[in-house]
Length: 422
Image 1 (cartoon, rainbow, N blue to C red):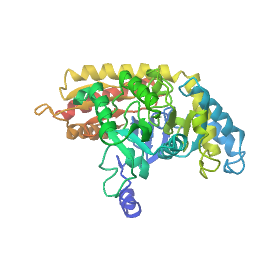
Image 2 (image 1 turned 90 degrees about the horizontal axis):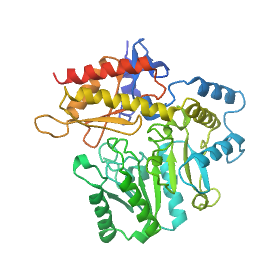
Image 3 (image 1 turned 180 degrees about the horizontal axis):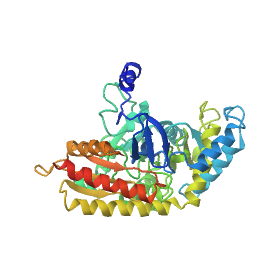
Image 4 (image 1 turned 60 degrees about the horizontal axis):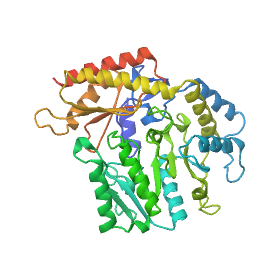
């Protein structure tokens, strides 16, 4: 009998990478059962998509109610009130004490692409600055903005022009806030006139790049630079949004308001929906028809997103994220006493990571991180690695995870790290 893995290899492009060979049969909150009936604790959450857990009852109820009304009209042809209402809610919730407007699209990469379009239309400028280690999607502009070549850019030819990169401040890897700002100043002097720059885009906490939080001093300095030169600041909150960092949006940690915010992933609790929210006058720069998409703001995703926002508020998930993150970091700190491979434990709220080095060379050890991941998988815990060096394990469990399941996962994590030491 042909295995599912063999069927996958025969039918699906190898470009669609797979972290595990688990084929999901059903899922509930923070647990997944595969086709063979094996149970796993999910510390990936579909890469930060189901912050409210798999199949949250309120989200499922909202989707079922919408299914009984209509599933698609294309908002640009026959609009619907729920789209308008969700835009109103995001306009009120997104950082910034100014009038805002919103558009809905389908994916995070599409949100980023549209943010760049909007920034260029509003400023009349072309250049965009991003940061090393940042991840902004797999579309062509997303690839160009992403600060990592393998596997995202390799083999895909020339990237869109007028995209520049500066180093992201990571003290652990020898890049201070001052050095990053100096590099940006040098970029303006040597490569691109700041008067040609439409926007600076960054993740408040780098996702694929290694879960490195942007220091508040850096974020405030970027805001000042943008204001000085008429540049727009774009916060890519695709992975950081919706209670993950202990705030609804990670930018709230810095008291800095971006001009445009991109969001997706956990916005709709597992249903495809993304958005761009920003200053009203900037969002209105493109002409009618310049923005949109056939499936943008699909009624099912819109209904789910309303339920997600309700759940975050009703279940106090921002507070819950901080509690869970503190417990995780405390446990990792205790494990660190037995595992010197751990060189850093970090992350706001429940967007946490642990970084590993080789104890002999003190160099990043992707081998050790992947060994921990594979041992944990054998024990029933799904983990994700990340980082430019591949030596980081990131933790993205649903914020709704039950206490007893969380405790079980922490025990597996500790056992896996210690076993990986040999």
